[in-house]
Length: 454
Ligand SMILES: Nc1ncnc2c1ncn2[C@@H]1O[C@H](COP(=O)(O)OP(=O)(O)O)[C@@H](O)[C@H]1O
Ligand code: SF4
Ligand SMILES: [Mg+2]
Image (cartoon, rainbow, N blue to C red):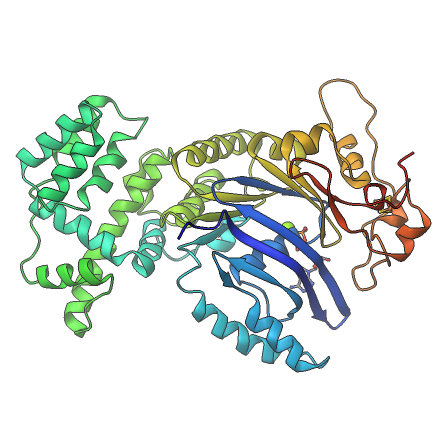
């Protein structure tokens, strides 16, 4: 069966936050697809629900978040189903404590999705990293949760490989013959070595000679014979052995292997001296280095979707540029899809394939980036683009009015109090989303037969 083209499918998602100050209607009928392998930029003013949308896909909502309606299908799994069912059962008596019980069950159900299929990078890296653990340990832990088998295979392969094996592998690499290299690795049952070989081979900061020396040294790394059966079990089953002492010993060995893989990965992400960095604590690193570590934790298990929530806003401009270059490289090398959340439209233009514009908890316009940027249809998008500073002189226009109070959002089109084109129907009825061509969709009465644009 062929896989669906979209990794995420969101339909009529309605979410409210219950607080002492009232009920905030944060998402008001979101319809959105994220296609496999694409970069979807999500833009909109602060408070329009961008982060809430990312957290919903991850199933990482706080207990006061009620799913009032809708579906969020992540690779065929409806993440919000239990929360939506609880909300329906509660019949208007929603209790955050009860919702919390449902969330706990959801967290368990999502063990095989979060970090494996979908992961998220937050704006402030310090909130994601544990301040009392070396960063290498934190990356190793993510691997140990989902990829025990890979770590064990890597370790066993280094013990089994001979210098002749590494010379043969290097020969295939020099000849750029990856297929024969993989055949050789399989025939010699050295699976796990390719991960390590490629990590050195793809490094841009290393001289070719250094790469080759490092690759040749990936052999004859003997394993304690007592550990061998435990490691073989882990390699076969993707689980740690259950016997307590053996489990502890194997875990210790695999944490060490995790550090090694963490250093390799950080090296690929352009981190200088990664072997030293993995032993450091978050406070010893600069903001840009920390964000690289967070990106590594999010990417190390090769997820199918990475949600980046304002990943560069807390960084200075030069580091921002480095992280953006890094993401562009990653996009070419991995087949992952990215949901890139930002209020910075010029940045989104650089990185995205498609753009979704949100206003007051709704996607008001979505489409291929050139189409949305060059021919914006929704009055809100047009005004957002007019407010972007450029080098060429043009009159900067702010958007009049304010984002509505989501406790009591305006009826009809929620943008109508700020819209210069508002018509009577806009104050009464929510506009439907219509396709204006080539997958460019807009939710505005001007394009849905409500009237002519002036
Ligand atoms: N945990 C929460 N409790 C109550 N309200 C919240 C919570 N998180 C977000 N909100 C509200 O939901 C709305 C959307 O917030 P958010 O998703 O963070 O927007 P954005 O990321 O676009 O700035 C805002 O009005 C915000 O105040
Ligand atoms: S539906 Fe009406 S109020 Fe809303 S953006 Fe379109 S024209 Fe403006
Ligand atoms: Mg946000």
